[in-house]
Length: 355
Image (cartoon, rainbow, N blue to C red; front, top):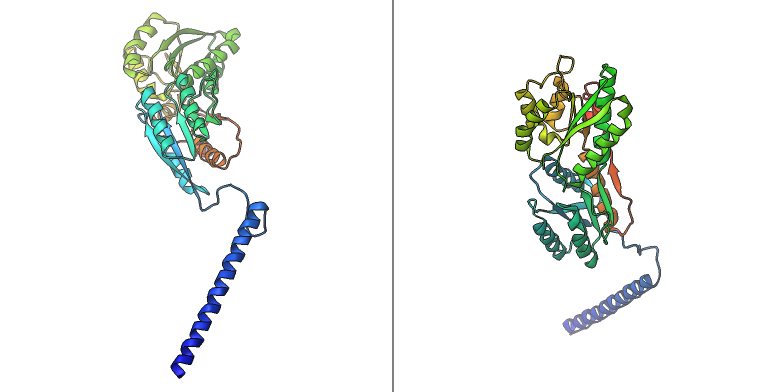
């Protein structure tokens, strides 16, 4: 009998408990319905990602065969892992193949990335990739290399370097040094990159702007060698150019990537000479690779404008977070400082070095 009474009591307790649970669930559902209609104190109606979320970015590089792109890959991953929320990158490399890059972007779209980030192989192809991303509802950033300004489709943002300022600032610095040293003619040999690389085109446009600005001080372009980013071609052709233009007394190279070739070429003509020594060819460069920095310290290179990958990479991460949260952002073109013998060991400038 006692056992039966105890059993009945237990059954009653279970019924009461289940009723209480049901009441709690109803209250919870009512709270959820209320939150859908209006903001409450306990629930944020914002769709922004919380600090616990991870943003996934599809990063399509034109290639990873160059220190600039390799370091950009490393820094964006580093800064993404340190950010709040975290940003993870799914990286592809097109190996300088436009068709492969278009295919890479389609593949990243299929992986439902939150943001697409593209460093284009060819400016003319950006239209197709931007359209594919926007059709899929994915915000798209063009980074490092510009997009087609005349294209029908525009990205949500652009983050890169101010390439025109790089060429302008480096050559301007060398012209100022030459004038201070008493040079009355500024006869420049330009070693450009590639006409299909908009950054290279913009750098040369900056060089031309500096030449125009200093025309009344004797500045002119003797010749423009289109290297197509081929160091072997430059090493083979620069010596004959220098011999054919004995009045040439300064050189600009579109990237320190070409510096070893330019050095070898000038050595073959006995013109790789330190600043301050007779026969020195004044030298302006771009990017500040380690080779360029060393050549500044040794006295062979007179000015080298930085491709500020550190600042650019942090900006890429910051804007990817903003785009994932549905925010509008401004395009950013980072201006890098010019390194010379007077400042290349400056503590603040060394913090920006990446090579």
